[in-house]
Image (tube, rainbow, N blue to C red):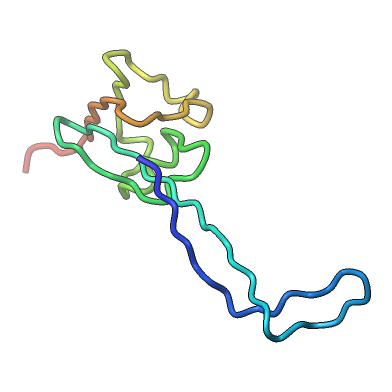
Length: 106
């Protein structure tokens, strides 16, 4: 899902012919905000300002997980860890993330 947010900046425009300010004119800008919906472990989650490209590495960092303790399945295919930085995510992708927990007998 993409959204456009319009904001009005009270920044006087400059006449490029002679670099004079016109205080009565204001510049309007459009700010582009990208939101991406991903299904992670069966739960739909939305990531605003996902950035382009939004990679598996970025997702794992945003989720606060340690990359060396995680396995990821992307759209029913195992995603090799050495390819995470090059693997771009798309709106509607389905991921299964398994977080390994170490332990032992006490």
